[in-house]
Every structure is written in structure tokens, then in C-alpha cells.
Length: 445
Image 1 (cartoon, rainbow, N blue to C red):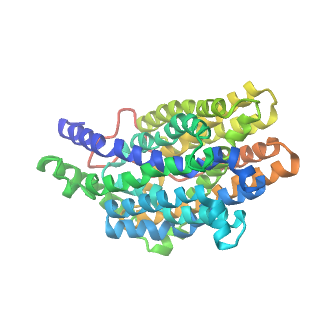
Image 2 (cartoon, helix red, strand yellow; image 1 turned 180 degrees about the horizontal axis):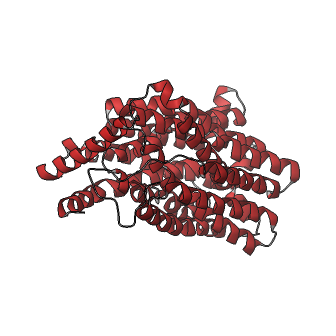
Image 3 (cartoon, one colour; image 1 turned 120 degrees about the vertical axis):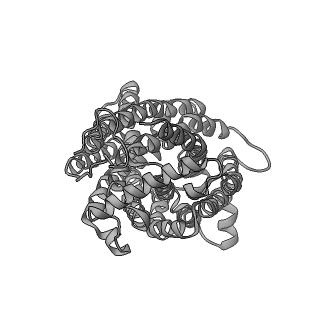
């Protein structure tokens, strides 16, 4: 690695990644804070566990329907404007959850219907953000850097839980202006998304050639390197796929299956983690701090495994290992009864759950480019996120049927185990480009 490459990548990393982490931090917080609101909201609105789970999952149905069109729009109109639109609209919808009861009364519908509608609308508004950022990163970073970059970006998830869980627990104690704690939680946690949408317009740069914060030599190196990688994909028979081919390609569907299994375990646990911990007999504030603990371990595991994945380029093996950890941790938590063991196994499972995405996304990026990458990445994410409906719904349904989370956790762990098997069969392209030098010890496979 020469001095120019080191300097350029460092500049791009410092400019783009911290800001995107902040954006995804508030995105993920707005997506899952309903898990904490549930501790008060269900009783206030008369929602059952199944109704709550159905509403939580409807977010991902909208995601499935609109991810691909949204990512294609991002590729057409540019990242800045499209990501800003996404963030402003989801922030406004998230704040509306605080007013479910008056909205229901004014429309003459039940609280359940309003809750379902707003969760679906939240998915409509947020669709395209995550795969859009993943695609955006492929426009700035060569292949051998992507796992570590995505891992840094995805630190927003554990950080949003490490910081957001105690914050959400504390906000439940706020009252005033005729609103309960769960209502204040939605309003106060939605505001940063709207404010950051303005920052996106003025801070992000769509492509390297437009980067005034890079000098001419750095722009030429980066643009040449990325163009060379794109040519290699085309020469290998990848890159120029139609929209239908992008979303029906067997390799894309295999990747989507792995991501489906991951998200079933991820969201199935995330939306009910505060309730599981609340069952230990702790206060809302204590539940917030304890709910943050698995994500501390998840953040450490994510960074460690991602660095090793970039060093060895054994993407498939790392994804399978992380999914195996998720399977053991989540299913194991359903097989024990002691709170300490449950929490310990959930920490183990979260190491796997947090680690999979940054280990996984370089795999489809290795055979997709341009508009095909935008459509393919969005297709994988949208299909994979359908389990964001399946996982939480089954957890709520099984809890209502059995009175505990045991069966649901074992089921989610089993789905992660299926994902482990599929991951081991993924075909992975070599990431040692002719335009650059692979990291020391890298092995193409």
C-alpha cells in the first residue's frame, strides 16, 4: 500500500464514515425504540403481544416493497438529496406514534389500526436508507476496505442500543404537557432525524469526482481504482444485470436467504429484549442499562471479526461462524431460566448478530456494480428484511400462546442455524484487484 492510497482512504474514512454512523444511529433508534415504548404503550393503547408484534413487523413489509425502487432513485438522483428525504420523512412519521390515541379517535378507527398504519408508513419512509448507504460506500471504497468500513458504519446499531437503551428507559419516566413517558420517547427521539436530514444535504458528496475536500491526485487515484474494479467485474461476467436479473439472480437470492435468517434472530430478539429483561424483575431504567449490555459485546465482536475478515478475505467462513454464534446464543437463552445465564447467552448471540452484516455485505459487492449493485443490494436487503416481520410476529404470537419467550427464542436460534448452513455454500468472488494490493495474508477463495 503506497502513501497516496493510505492518505486518500484515510481522508475519505474520516469525512464520510462518522457522519453516516450518526445518521444510522438515529435511524436504528427510531426503528426499534418501540420495544421500550411497549413497556407502557401496550397497556395505554390496549395492545396485545400479538398485535404489538404484528405492528412491529409491518415496518419490514413496507421495506420489502419499496427498497429496490428507493435504491434505484438514490442512484438516479444522488445520495445527498435522497438520503435527506428519507431521514426527514421517517422522523416526522416516528413522532406521530406519540399521538396514536387522538389520531384513532379523530379517524374513528381502533388504536391497533393506527399503530399498524404508522408502522407500515415508517417502513415506507425509511425504505432504502440502509442499502442506500451500503451502495454509497461502494462508490467511495475499494473492495478490500469494505468489510471494515461497513463494520464501522454498523457500529451505529450497538451504539444506538448501548446509549439509546438507557436513554429510552429514562425517557419513560418523563411526564408533562398531557403526555406519558412513552409518548415523549417517540417525540424526542424523532427530532434528531429531521435535523440531520438538513446536514446530509450540505455535508455528503455524491461521488469522488465531486469531492472538493480531496486534491486532484487523490481523486484520480480513487476514481481509477474504483473504475478498474468495475471493469474486472464486467470482464468476469458480472455488473451489467437488468433489474429483473438483479432481483432474481440465484446468487442474490442465496445472499438474501442468509440475510433473512440473520434478521429473524436480530429483530425477533431486539423488539422483545426490553420485555425479556423486564421479566427479571427490574425497573424500566435498570432494564435500559441491562438491555445495552449485549450490544457492548456485539460491538467488540463486530470490529474484531471484520478486521480478521479483511485480513484473510475469508468472507463466507466468517459469516457462517458469526451466524453459528447467533444460533447458539439465541436458542440457548430460551433453554435456561436463570437471568444471568439468559443475559450471558444473549450477549453471545449478539456478538454473532452484530458481526454478520459487515462480514456479509462485501460478498454481493464482489459481483455487482453500478445500477445493478443498487438494485441487487436493495433486493437482498428487502427480501432479507421480510424476516423482520416474521421474527417479531412469531415471538409475540408464541408468547401469547405459551406465556413465555422460550419457544420463540429456540425457534429464532434454529433459523440462524439454517442461515449458517446456507452461508457455507455461498460463492464468493476474489477480492484481490489488479489495481491494488490485497492485505497481507489475504487468500482469495
